[in-house]
Image 1: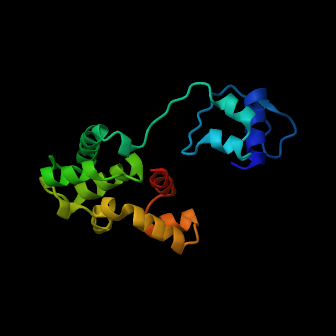
Image 2: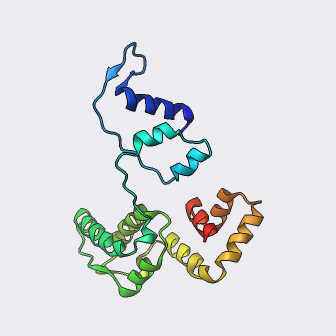
Image 3: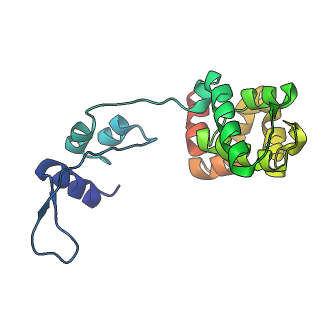
Length: 190
């Protein structure tokens, strides 16, 4: 959020009023604000990129939701939920994944979090029959699995190599490795 937008949001929260585009008078509002971020706001405040007063206005009831890779036990629950949802939507009777396919899903890091799992479930279920197998996964997902399969052994050297090749441009290095920037930062910290 730009500093200008942060100031506008802060003013709206504090005064509980807005001025419509083209309007001459402020209009009172009675709303609750829900804000979400995948950024570390405390760090952004230190760097001068986020207003501290806005942070304290928004940080009233905080819910921290760890990424899916840090709560693997939820994967089975989410799969069951999406399975029921998409079976109803598409009039199918898919029972679930084979043990091999489920093991792969449990081992995967899910850089796209729940949205990635949801999308994978939908596209896989559309083409599956009774049980979803690895062959039912979309080609792009299977390719990603192959690229990340040997990652643990040479992960450090791949990361350092990508950083040197991109002159330590983290966004380009993440793109080169097919990782999100947050995954790159997490692996750098490790």
